[in-house]
Length: 109
Image 1 (cartoon, rainbow, N blue to C red):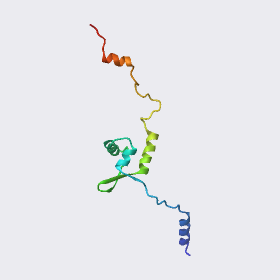
Image 2: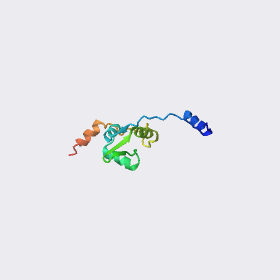
Image 3: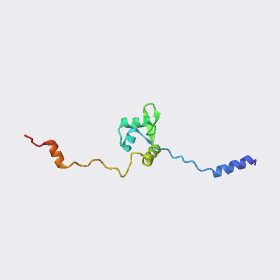
C-alpha cells in the first residue's frame, strides 16, 4: 500500500457525510402567500436587492428557494430600521365631538 492510499482512506473516513436532501422550490404564488406584498412590490424588491432573486428553471417558470426566503425573513427582523417596538400606532380614534363638529359646523347667523 502506498502512502497516498493511506491518506485517501483517512480523508474518506473523516469527511462529513453530504446531505442529499433537495431544497424546497417555491413558485411565485407560494412566495406571495408567504410574503404579504403584491406581485409588483415583490418584483420591485427583487430589483432593488431587498428580496432574493428567483431562479428560472425554464423560460417561463421562476422559482425561489425556501431556505433563501426564510433567511430573508430572519434578516428582516434583525436589521429592520423601520421596526421600533415603542413607537406610537397613529393618532388613534378621533373623538366623536370633533367628527360631529366637522360634519355639522355651528350656525353663526
